[in-house]
Structures are given as C-alpha cells and as structure tokens.
Amino acid sequence: MHEMSAHEAVNEYFVDAARIIELDEEMYPVLTSPYRELTVQVPLRLDDGDLLVARGYRVQHNGARGPYKGGVRYHPTADLEEVRALASLMTWKTALVNVPFGGAKGGVEIDPGPLSSRELERLTRRFTMAISHVLGVYRDIPAPDVNTNAQVMAWMMDAFSSKAGYTPAAVTGKPVDLGGAPGREPATARGCLYILSAYARRHDIDLAAQRVAIQGFGNVGSWLAHELDRVGVKVIAASDVQGGVHCDAGLDIAKLRELTRQRRPLSEAEGVDRITNEELLAIDCDVLVPAALGQVLTEDNADDVRAGIVLEAANYPVTPNGDKLLGDRGITIIPDVLANAGGVVGSYFEWVQNIQQFTWKESRFNDELEDIMVAAFEDTHALADRHGCTLRQAAYAIGVERVASASRMRGYV
Ligand code: NAD
Image (cartoon, rainbow, N blue to C red; front, side, top):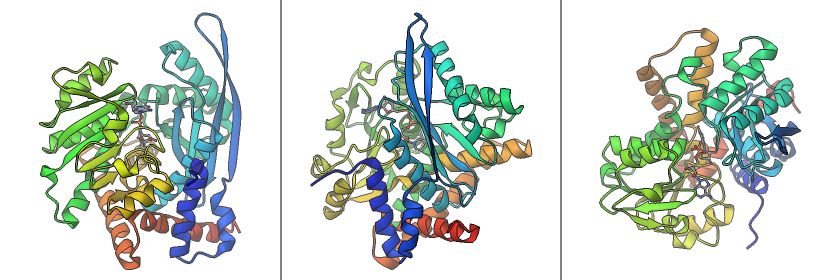
C-alpha cells in the first residue's frame, strides 16, 4: 500500500467525513486547500559568525469561524507540506471544540537542538517579523508546538508588539508573568486526560487499572504522564527522541520529569529497562499515546500494536493505512482533533483573558476546559453511534459541517 503525504492523508480523512455528512462536493476544493500560504526566508547569523538560511512557513487554512489559530514548530521536517496538513487539522479541531477560531500552522525547517538561546531568539524574532503582516489578535494567533515553548512565545509577542504596540493577545502559550494563562502549559495534557476519562466512563473501563505507554516526553507527553500519575494511572513506558524506558511496576514520573527539566535524556533514568521508540509502540499496554511527531503508526507497524486504545496526543500520528489496520483489529483510536484539542481550548482562554485584561484562577480554567472537552467527546461519540462510524470520522464530520456552514454563510463560495 502507498502511504500518502501528510496533507493528502488529512484530506483523505476529510473526504471520509464529508461523505458521511453528504457534503456538497462543490465544497471539497474550498476545504481541502489552504486560503493562504506564506513562505519566508529566515537568515540566522550564528554565534560563531556563520550564516544559516532557513525556510519558514505560515499556512492559513480556513478562517470562516474566526481568526486563524495554530502553533509554530521548529523541526527539520516542518516543510510546507507538513505545515499545510497541520493547518487543516487545526481548522477541524477548532470547529469540533467550537471555539471561535479558524486553522493555521507555522514552521521553520531547522533543527533547533544545536542552537544557543541567543540564536533561538534571533531566529524567532526574524521569523515573526517576516510573517507579522498576516498575524494579529483578530487575524492569526500563533502558539507553541514541537520545539517551541513559552519563552519562544514571549519573543514572538515582543517582536510583534515592537511593530503593533503591546499586543499580548496576538500570541498564546506565553509565560504566566507575561500574560500567559495559569493552566495553559498543561492544558493539552489535561484535555487528553479528560477525554480518556470520558471514554473510560462511557465504556465502563476502570481508568485506574490502565497501563499507559507514552511516546514523546515534551510539553504534552511529560505533562500527561504527570496528570496520569496524579490520578493513580500507571505509566509503564515513556520515550524521548533518544529512546525510551520501561518498568512494568510503573515509572517514577517525578524523576523522569526532573531529568527532562535538566535537559537530560530519559535513558539516563536508573532502575528501568531501556527500549527503543519502535519497541515502545509495540509494548504490552492498555493505552498507547503517541505524543511526539506525526506518522509514527503506519502499515509497517500497526500490526505490532498491543494496546486496546490509541490516544492521539500528537498531531497526525497514525497514517490512513495504519488507521485502517488498527481499526480492523478492533483497536479504538481517539483522534488527534479531539484528544489534543485541550491545547487550543487553553489558548482560547488565554486570548479571552488577554482581551478582557482579566486573569482567571487556574481552577476556573480547568473547569471550563473539562466542560468543553467532555461536550466535544459526547458530540463525537453520539455521531459515531448514529452513523456507525469511527471516532475520527465522527470528529471530522462535526468539524467539517461547522466549517462548511460558516464558509457558506460568510459568502466564501
Ligand atoms: P515538544 O517539543 O515539547 O516535545 C516533543 C517530544 O517528542 C520530546 O520529548 C522529543 O524528545 C520527542 N521526540 C521528538 N522526535 C522524536 C522521535 N523521532 N521519536 C520519538 N520522540 C521524539 O512538543 P509538544 O509541544 O509536546 O508536541 C508534541 C506533539 O503534540 C506534536 O505532535 C504537537 O503537534 C502536538 N500538540 C502539541 C500541543 C501543545 O500545546 N504543545 C497541542 C496540541 C498538539
């Protein structure tokens, strides 16, 4: 079987859903291609005097329901094709959770690993200025994603504000002391937990008895491990880019998080077995959580998965061929647009608070997040039951229907 590009794959999921809701085919070309794609040159003078010239992208997929919204990633694979796919995923995700945003994504094709903090800052400011004419509080609002964090968002906000005046609401995922929202950093992971809990309640699964394996131990993966640990769910395996660790009795999450905080690899943990990332995906567990990069479960390894549930914390971790093989084996996939939507819902709360200049308590943030996530889960589950389709098809169907309807009402077609 041929594996498609990321963008082709997201569009395949779109077409699947569009057929379920009997969407007028006239809408297909409108909703499968982005509204605007911006490619920019990002020259970076390195500390040693050398010049590195990277490519940067901002893709705005659909803005019918509100300003474009989506993260920015720094990664060697963050090319236009990948950013395009991730931008359209954001459109379906913001619509599914019903927050007033469209979908966008940004990326710089670079490995930030070897960069110093000053180089990272220069890169961020240069990229932000290059795309600043398409950004803005009611235009397009970036957020963190792979290899970007609150500090990077602070530089983006500062660069944008140097042009437009102090504008905290133009960027989300900022440090709390700089207009960030208490609760935003763990929001993606908390959202994953709310969704997994709702699924367990619905299917009479004892959440506390589940054994979880998590690929990726960055913002999403490490916070999810923390949240699961907090509610008494065992995380038996975890990994970062260099490999993973496994312990059937349950990993010591606080110790692993401390290693990550010190920028040391998980493989330095003591008293655990070392495993590769491939072995992690095939480990004997109940819930498998890809929380790193896309396209990790494919036709080549879907048959090795031993979990009963795949919770897609990462964006687009399962290819269409992988999705089919897992589905045929009766493995439930809780799709990215639902599972990891807590991040963009948290960003929505941060944006609202910045606009109103009023900070919520973290308890309010979490309560509102849970309400939205559980409602999206219930809507998705109900549609899946009604149409006898998968959760992914149902989640996309809800998103696609809302975006198609808004696009028509706005007069896009
Ligand atoms: P991050 O940069 O904080 O962490 C990424 C983690 O993945 C790190 O532990 C890294 O070592 C690991 N990793 C990188 N390459 C890997 C590889 N080849 N194999 C195994 N592990 C690898 O990124 P993040 O913000 O946690 O994002 C992770 C995923 O979640 C991405 O798919 C992202 O799009 C998605 N996501 C993030 C957010 C958010 O709020 N940050 C929201 C929604 C979805």
